[in-house]
Amino acid sequence: RRVAIAPVALALAAGCGGSGNDEPEPPRDVGNVVQPGAPGEPSRKLSAQDLAEIDQAKHTQADVRFMQDMIHHHGQAILMTEWVPGRTESRDVRLLARRMELSQETEVEQIQGWLRARGEKPRDPEDHGDHDHGSGEGLPPGMLTSRQLGQLYSADGRRFDRLFLRFMTFHHQGALTMVQELREAGGGAETEIGVFTNHVEADQGIEIARMRELDAGLR
Image (tube, rainbow, N blue to C red; front, side, top):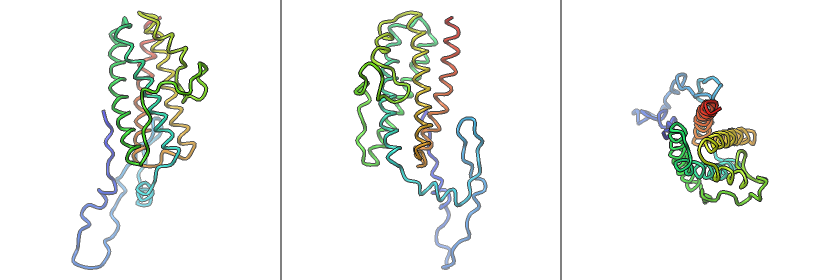
């Protein structure tokens, strides 16, 4: 489920070896290079200038903060999924939670690698509430408070399933808000983080739709 990042710049450079003269080669046709749009947005063809700008884009401090907060965010989601097997009555909720757990564990590893490659120390994904004093103030969007986590932990059966689906939907919506806020802060331009945020939007959007469907079936 990992998203491969196509090395566009390397593709453009392929075949540019020595030609036996000192004349520069003509620019290659990049009219067929297409950048997928974010969910709900169209794809677009990239010009040579677009590709050069993408290749030169560097990460920002907003990107670093986003990735650190996403580790925290994913860590709480993983914690919630770990409670499912002993409490759920629903096979569908169990399968969905397992899918989320595997997906978000993989993404945490990806984020940690991204941070280390840029000289940043990743935060601990098991740090679930260092800013939470019961109100949720200071937490990334969508994070549950300690009181809400306690409600979920103490529930079982149908009540647990309903709380899990509703709390996790709220949690996923927070991740989408984090992506939006990153872009508003001027982040997300670097190729790798751009691909990652597009993946977060698509994947979490699909899971939100599935959770709403399951929640409706519990009523």
